[in-house]
Picture 1 (cartoon, rainbow, N blue to C red):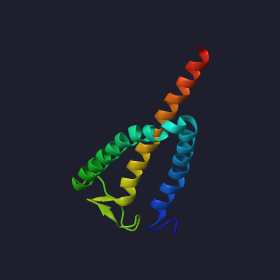
Picture 2: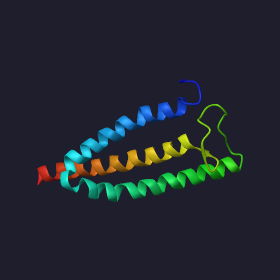
Picture 3: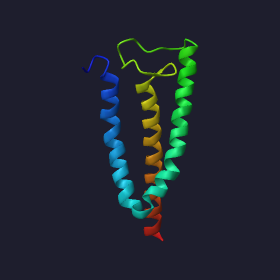
Picture 4: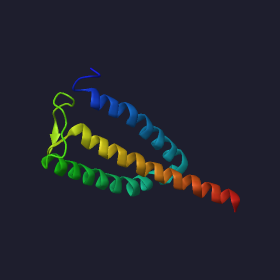
Length: 115
């Protein structure tokens, strides 16, 4: 299973989901009642970047710059891009966006202690 069609998806979810869940836990702990407002501010830009990267990947694949080997993914495509690759771009963008919001919270917290 780890070498076949499911390998990419399993690895992607295995490394990405635990970190996203941890980030969400910290976000909800820190921002409390403002958590949903923070998510509404953070997620749309992450989704836009994920879509942008997927479109760029689609253009590169259609131009023959690279491809994905058969049997290395589920075979479900969004345009010419494998579903797992689209999920990778979306998850990575979410990881970065949540990370930046949490970093900002940490900096603000430290500044409040110094003041």
